[in-house]
Image 1: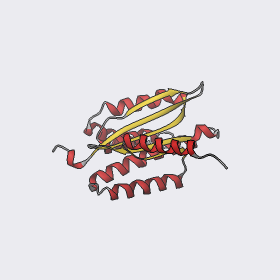
Image 2 (image 1 turned 120 degrees about the vertical axis):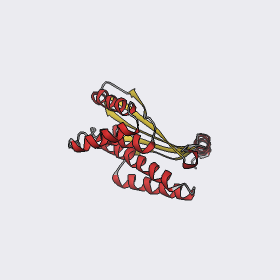
Image 3 (image 1 turned 60 degrees about the horizontal axis):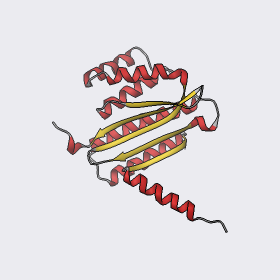
Image 4 (image 1 turned 30 degrees about the vertical axis):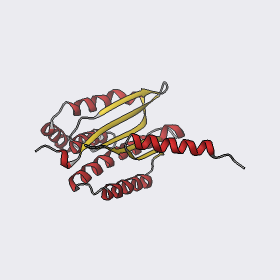
Length: 191
């Protein structure tokens, strides 16, 4: 008979860790369109169960869509090594709002361009983000290789907060890219 106690103790520890960090949903592995749709459905059900304000639900959902599309896009653009195609998505809730974290492997050659786009987005206020978004659309930047910039702009616009990011070098060709933002809950908004 297989001994399950050590494995069960890991599950209990994981549950306690997730609860203490206020994580509602976490997934790590290979992302597909079908999986992305299921994650969105799970999150939507969780937000509905929490009886969250419709405005907050829409913002969280829109940010999730952009984050998950980013993970899927990078997984599809990498070589078919299993570990490189894996990604990470986490959503959690604290007293003030929702934090969303995504992570995926990217080629080191993409870091400078991606970091430049994030820094540009983070320097802009609400009106500046709106203008940049409209300019990108008018310039025809919806080509397959440049949609990441629009997604980042949209995440910042919908969340109303700066984007936090980190690149952790894995090897000579790849790094792990983490992106995080925060959506404030409606009752905490100051008008």
